[in-house]
Image (cartoon, rainbow over all chains, first blue to last red; front, side, top):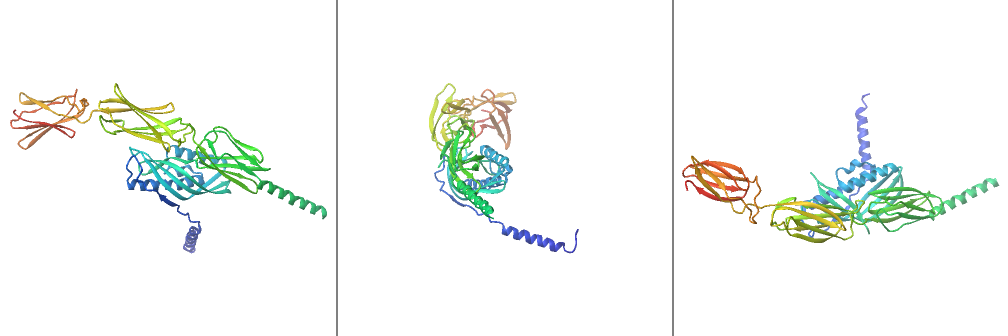
Length: 172
Length: 288
């Protein structure tokens, strides 16, 4: 039913939404350091390519976090392909079956590009990453852990962006 | 009243004992395990707890009886990576980290580029190999990869490269002789093969001859070869151009059995030229 109070109600809802948005915890951007890529080979790495690879790799961490937090495999579509996508999808399905969720809030990346294939079809990087892992069992927080480890990622170009094809943490 | 106090005291003692035993629970497992191998995880304490093994690429959950070992069966924990193990009891939790490392090489992802290229091209062929184990984990331990490029009835180029961070690569020259070559990569008896077609390069010498045939002039090229003597493939387009008093006639002819033929009007004073790709041939002024 529409009456005279509708504009006031709309304003109230808008105010609530705005304040609600402000009250939400801000997602902090991770600290990112990218090592000098002069020695990457064998193909010459142009600054634009380097910037695009780093941008898309960092975006993949956001997708990974969302997919594993929401148990939603479609979150992986934009940033992952091949083996990485298959393995992460399996984890999402496994978590869903067990009633688990995980959050991987990355706080620091120290990235070195180590290989750019001669034909330009793959690029490999090493990332010393720090993240906060939260484990929830049926929505109840069970554990939190600060993790520092190194990841190896292989990215391949697609129509519009670089996608992560291999994502594997390397033994300490 | 006394009875009630006794029950209350007992409850407190039992509760304290439960908390104490849960706080004493311990979690022990190796710091590094091979992908797919069985893992025995020791726990200490008493009571029940839940064991979580978590990484972005695999998650396991087990109900465990503290004081007993939890066993991860062979093949169950198969994705290489850094894992967190949480043992969560009713009142406390234990945490540890461990790594699952890849097994020995089992499959190769071999990319040979290009699949077709001109002969005698320095560093023209590239090979890139990613080494995987049976669980599709990248094998990060340094691994020797042998590359071999064998030309049909010709020489063989062999080179061994050590894979670092799971990848090995090299560049090789294409052969001086046209034909297909087999390009293979091998690791511990695992072989992947690709075929690289080496075709002749640009024609080295383009020459045509002309002879009158009534009111027309018949044009024919010599057999087209590249600078290494390989026949230029049939189908290659050869263009004949006749220029006369500001007008121009052009005929595109595909090469047949190495030769291109056509005829054009025999105009006195005309200039006839021939070209293919970026190569210009000789020029004839008619009549000769």
